[in-house]
Image (cartoon, rainbow, N blue to C red):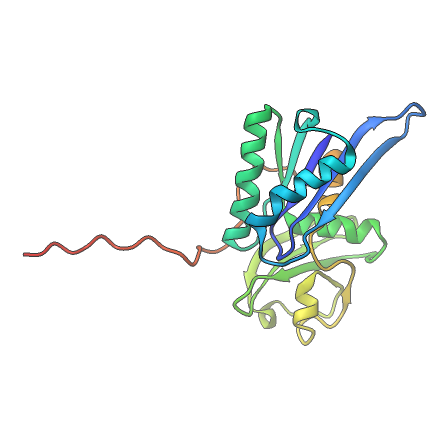
Length: 220
């Protein structure tokens, strides 16, 4: 059983994917999926959502065979919660941990649901009146990015997936498809090899807001 979760957006998403075929040879795929009720509460909600997903599926942690985690790009705090949790579970359970660019998961969902048919971009909220953006072909393969910049600098009339188009319609007038990363599609990306797999390292794209204090000056 593959456990997948993404903390790159304001709402934590968790899913379980069963890659074992049933007696008819059919793979069950995503068996349960849960989305946080409150935004920006990653640390408080990720562990309870994981427990809820496993109890819903009727499994325990020892039944997990792999972990999939969204590596961003996204805010420092949210990504840190997800990646630390993924690494800890992988170490304790001795199972592999796969990282996936959260924008790639959005792209795969857009392609598979028919929201796009040709080249498109995925743009998500980067705060500070900026967006994270990557470009994809009609099959969902990443062509360029991800990068972070002002919407005006990345404006396009082509199809745009993600919350960036909702927040900045003047830069991205052709909004299509899903708005935020989804753990169910993240799981599909890993189990069905639909996206490039990475080490569970964060895609921050810019330095965190918090910086270490400077050493105190020597008093002479």
